[in-house]
Length: 296
Image (cartoon, rainbow, N blue to C red; front, side, top):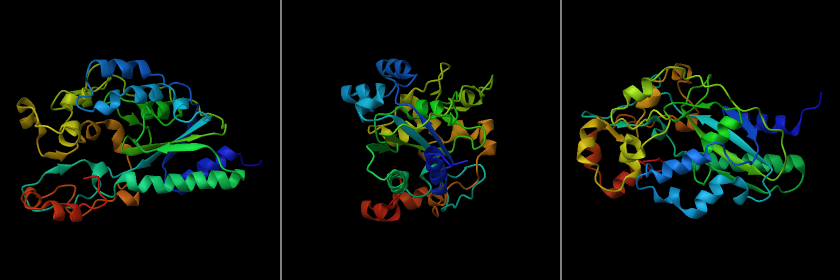
């Protein structure tokens, strides 16, 4: 039986290193109303860009981003599992860095692979294809589209979870001006009655309604917040200096996560558990040299 265009595209995505790939429609995402209520409750904190009118309109309808869009290709690529991957350490006392930031910056790695995938599609079809791709850089509800493309379910910790590889992965999307058969959505909610992530969050940022109060999230506080961390939350951060993995580390589904992930995201020496004394001694120039091409 002849291989379909969609099968060839998904095979090429896997060849490029993507662990998961699926297709969905450009219809409005199912949780857009929930997201709007989240914004209205100011749970996005200082991330004002999320509430901009133009972004909200585009987020509600992907066709406002690419009017020719007929299909959306959703992709996932793994990064190291902090429970099993080696963690090169600096001299104590140590800080902790979220696993997604241990290696190369995914904003630099993924675009090259997405460009290659689009080039493959255009070569296969024989003409240019209207397209737009994102690696969490655009007004798209990534997890909604990923769930609808069959890549997993949105867990109580608000992460997308896949039963085979857990949740340690980046998402990317390619809006395409060609029609591909959509994959069936991932309807099952496999969190069940488990509440480990909610109970483990030291700042109580994970809410019972399966949303996150970013204003209390350690990742937000150590990365996105540009002003001083509130006094009542400072002692709850523990060793985390950039991001946080607690709600993923306690998730039972992450026992299936690949130990290493994609080679591009392998931990750099001293990054997972950086020496606080060494880092505080860095000048801006030496910091930029040390963490060049890193999310830090």
